[in-house]
Image: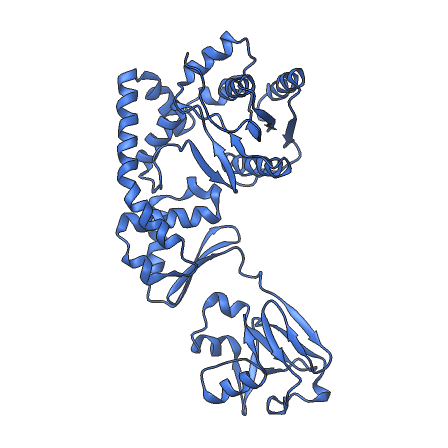
Length: 412
């Protein structure tokens, strides 16, 4: 069996994800023999009767070699939704915690060539939109350098390595069943491939990734812009658009990649081509993809911008949301000494402001002013001591501009 050849600096610390399976045990032992400074991370999901025994054997291996070990025990954690997705999310959150604690340089993960081929065949079967076919040797998840040095090794090679080196390993019994599409591909396609067929499939993956590269670069150019413009997006060709959306969404939500189907991307593209000025779609709980007039973005909450400041007397006030100078004459706004304490907060549902003898909904005014959806959520209003809105900063008319200038009112 070929030796593992990698060139990562050995004076750094690395996290290694160890499940107890033959792949991760082989990787752990290879890295240890090469002299890397390792920290083992293991997650015990208690899904199988052998889970505790696997943990004990990993603890034994770590203790004999004086390798730091951290274990996440999920016995008291409640699974939310799909187990596979939930397990992956808490696993990487756990890795990230230890990664930061040890100021690690990389996270070693034991994906092998069988995993690479399975992933590619699943991508083809699902017609997935991806920025890369198969599995990358190096990538970023949660700002961690994820390293996969075993992608040239077949699973059977790693099994043989464990047996030759008399390493403990456990076979996940759930992987022996055909309950999941991946398992069916593993048992009925990959298992039956000869070396020539494997090489042909790897060549196909490499060729497809070369074709993707030029579209990837176009997508990265738009991704680098601070403001994401609908016009700039529409200038991209279709494949570059798809790759851009995949990269953009997964940069916010790294673990959503398995849920980003072709149909889901098409839904988002439909939003971007919509004539409606403000549209949103839920990506994950509390995460929205939002189009607002001629730009778009991802928001992690529709209600995260709530704020409120109490002002007891005329003063200059600068916050992270706005700047206002109340030391000037505020009588044109019907703000007098008896109006205090003032309250300055973001617009809330049901807010109305009196204009002459009429009352008008603040949200309607902001829509007419073409204030974007996300900006409207954090837009400030000034209320007097009786909770009446006395000032709504606008800049469309000359009168409104003069008032804003006099108050030195600046929205950040």
